Length: 167
Image (cartoon, rainbow, N blue to C red; front, top):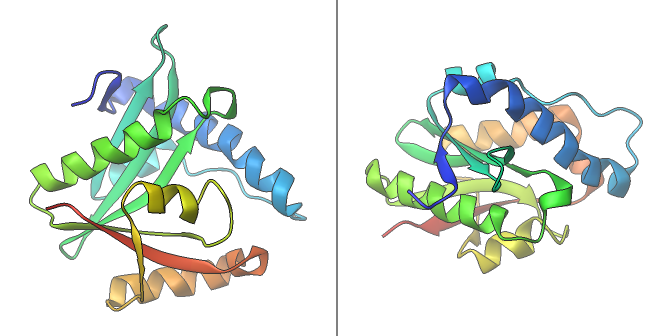
């Protein structure tokens, strides 16, 4: 595992929701939504099939995390969040690379995600991390598209699916 990146432990779970809520402020400022729901709790994330990795700063404070779902043989990067005041320091990229390495270690040959096509810290960031666009072809991915529509995420811009090889 990369230094400063580790598997989330029980003691870390409470911090995950706060990290995501802080990171979501960037979307709130950009999109100006009338409502923006609170993040999923860390306990809820930990209860889902898959894994959560956290990034600690030099003081041991959690400043970011990545949550990867493992469903129907698919590794899907569900959430990447870094506290904005720790942004642009490599935490996001390091978390993505660690998630890809963990996915490969768990036997996956690819990792998918869904994101905004034209938000600088979304699709362009993931392209630089080795992800390319693909169409949602599995029932799991098509359901994600439906959920995004139900949540109204598509009203803020084009949503796309991306994939990276873990080979």
